[in-house]
Length: 245
Image (cartoon, rainbow, N blue to C red):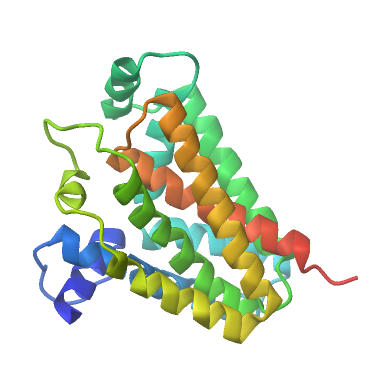
């Protein structure tokens, strides 16, 4: 499991963690929430150090930058391509063709800007249980990929970056790491942890329902978009609900 965990970190981040491990997607996928904990740990470290020097609004900017850097902007790239492809009334084949284009369009640029602004707003207003939630939100957001892989077909049967994750059949035990993360949220953050769970379910279900309605499949870009939307949405929801009086 350790080897697959390192493989997941190498796939999802730019963090150095030894020799490159082969990606066995079906074994790595259930560990995505634990890999997200590493992203959250980097975020917490940046936030803690930056808080020694700057006020909260500046720290939030640095947090957003840290998330983009540590992931190599992998998910942001997927968000931009997904926005370009799904915008407007297009046939699924045309949407998939647009998403495959590496160039970013106006809709993709606007969507990325809005997502980063939402993260900044959420991080700026996050007070209660801040340290715990900085650690757990990235982990929870990456768990949405497990549900997307299990409940939507892959949109590029001829091949694509996300194809390897769709080779196996859904298994209940693939959700064990998510269960650990959510249990930690409930124990460490109380009702804020419960809100994290509710927000995760609502955001993941909403995005997957939208994907099914638009093109009834999912791609690697759309998985990345799901992570970014969930992360930004969770920070925003939590900051609104737990702000001090």
